[in-house]
Length: 371
Image 1 (tube, rainbow, N blue to C red):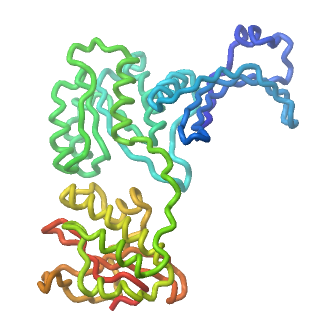
Image 2 (cartoon, rainbow, N blue to C red):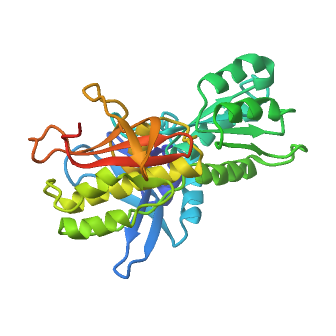
């Protein structure tokens, strides 16, 4: 991670051995740098540094590194605190935003309160708070004076509920006016209060508390270990897939009969997709169907599988579980295990969503020939 910081002043440049009074084309710059290093023993360390460089032009090798004040941490939260500290010196034009065509960021609404006066410190807090949120890939939507427009704010929270809601109790007298309708629109989401009624917390204390809540909303996870090779035959895949069966993840007799001798040519790949679908089903069961977004969006965001909720070419029958036909429960949603391939390599997992028992019922595992 690299971000531009405010230009080093002449006093610092002189202390680093430069001569600003003689500059003609030199361009002094400062950058923040953060790295994550995987050590040979398997441990991870985090480095944070402020670099000061003197550019003498675009010619390769013409830039002079004047300072590299690096700090190293074994604890991620300590490294993050140092990054947030450097954000206070970030260049004025630097703004956190998602990369074009990249993963979309979570949205969190923060009701900060306070006057609209630009000299009010709470107004000046906004940028540094947004930068801290950007570190967690969160778009922090800060609202000042929410109690001056309660109907409008509540309407937006109900019609377009964000991923989480934070309310500062220092200046918002009745947080429940906002948290209650938000939770009604998005059950199970995070809605929390920050600050103290006494209003005695400093900005640094507010920023530290905000960072704590942001880490809960969007935890930073280490890269998972490489995907294990998986089963090499459908006999092995059949055993592993059957082991996934649980109250929230059912396979119909039809699906079970398809496993031995399945025509899909890559049993390991199919098993990995089935196992990811089982994890989606587990979330669906645990949250009683209240995922906050569609199953398709949830599956792609959290488990990297593409789920289509409709198939206009199909008119499947109701699924049967243990000889009982579930009226109105049809296996129309499906996981795309590769697409735009020839029929012999285009895989599909068709399943039904049982909204009464909050479970997935798989009725087809194999090639794209469900009918």
